[in-house]
Image (cartoon, rainbow, N blue to C red; front, side):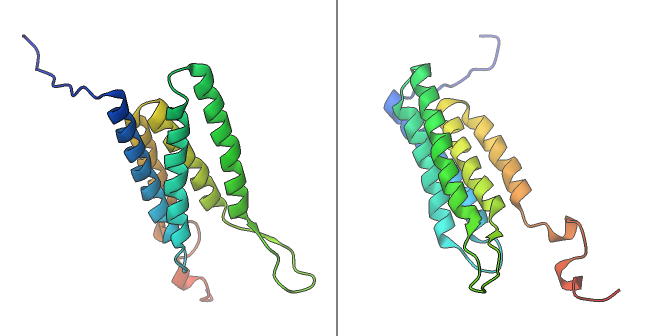
Length: 161
């Protein structure tokens, strides 16, 4: 043979599904670790939520089989269901003061839950390489780069200029 030999590992459909689910878990774990350690207070539940969202999204798409209509319906169901999780992450009850307004917080965490579902769907239905590249880009986006942000660094915010 003139070209380089390519070694291909033949995976049974069940083994391929297990590998894809494992990759969905790893993707959810990576995003979940980022979100769990974001801010001043640790949030261990965010880790579990992201892992479960990634795994369940992949599982639903894999369970739909190879029928494109069934996969489309599964992906639509994932997108609708994850929207409720994101809303729960954003809605913050108002403080106990009488005239206090409710706050909107957690937009990045809600978006990361949505993104983790998209990773699970991509791992299950498309190219795992595409999911890994998207994961790297998202982790770069979610990273806490206080020195590269807009405005003064956190230690200088209260200092008068």
